[in-house]
Image 1 (cartoon, rainbow, N blue to C red):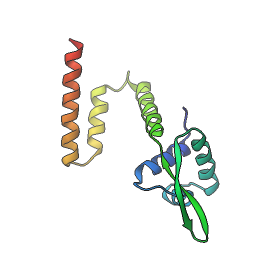
Image 2 (image 1 turned 120 degrees about the vertical axis):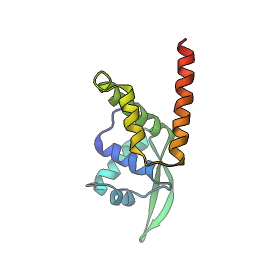
Image 3 (image 1 turned 180 degrees about the horizontal axis):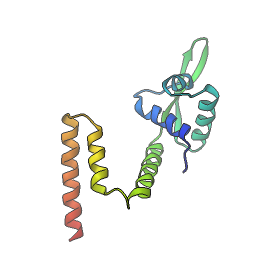
Length: 130
């Protein structure tokens, strides 16, 4: 599924929050997002099952739906990310891509765990290739 920059931004906002958000909260969390744009994006992504209504809340004097991402949306984001990498794989090595990804995060206990998981994955991959 092809996503435009606004759709990607809305999905990013929803995935970065631990709770479901109203359309107004999404607008306030984004850059240059308007209420009409967010509502149109949410309608499209509801139809595509990339977001779901998580509940209803009071927003001022009106009731507002809250939205959250679906598991399918994460799969779509992974596909897009891998597609973008595919476009440059002849220019940028996998090692450079992986090193860049690992440098994105600060040091911490989570990083050590990710490194261990990568070592295990690469070890298993090497065994399967033999």
